Image 1 (tube, rainbow, N blue to C red):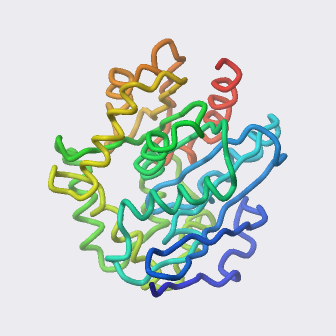
Image 2 (cartoon, rainbow, N blue to C red):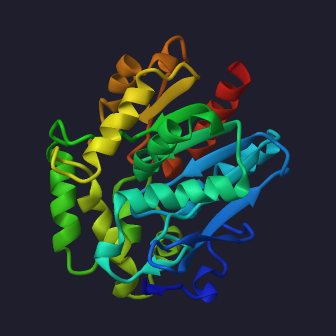
Length: 301
């Protein structure tokens, strides 16, 4: 599998992001390996919190939350998905499949030997993370889901997602930083927008970001549909604590929290919350509040 690796110089002096890089190798399924970057802060023997990002962001999205979670005594791990951030970026759109991303992140959990995990997942972080919860249930102690879903293709994804999908394929230059800025309620500074663009010095580095919107199952013919339906069968029996913390201003995932609360037994009796003044990228808008929600949730469960 051919891939690009963003030069380290692109990540120098990013606003608010000074975490030391860590790397693992995962099987590219074609006889070679890809490098996965992850932030790993806090004591190695502490309870782990896994922060999974989505499209087209990277672990920079969690820079506001990580210090607070570490200060509360937790080990915080924030990987960059393959194709994003400091992780390697395959050059062919067809190299990006839903199953490969699940397997790659699953390999990260196995190599780090993580157990008793608290998962926080947003956007594609949930599409991948909730599959991992279903397929490696013993590793996870609890889940916080924010502005995400596990689609099966049985229902329409909605007009907002359809428009996003169309835009992502037709825009001449894919503006990763601009997309994050547009999906936040706060106005991001030029420095922060530049940090979201940092992994992609040229358009050829963005094949993963371009392909992700097409990997969301929108029909039962999608290759991920059966696996996601199977994952829902597990989640429908999930008794461990499951909290929703969706924002109040995200047209893409609005209402997904109510579906989870209806279908997942572990949501019963939890202190579900709506994050006020939060857009799709609510980590940008209300990172301090989200960290507080996670800390309180762990303490209560």
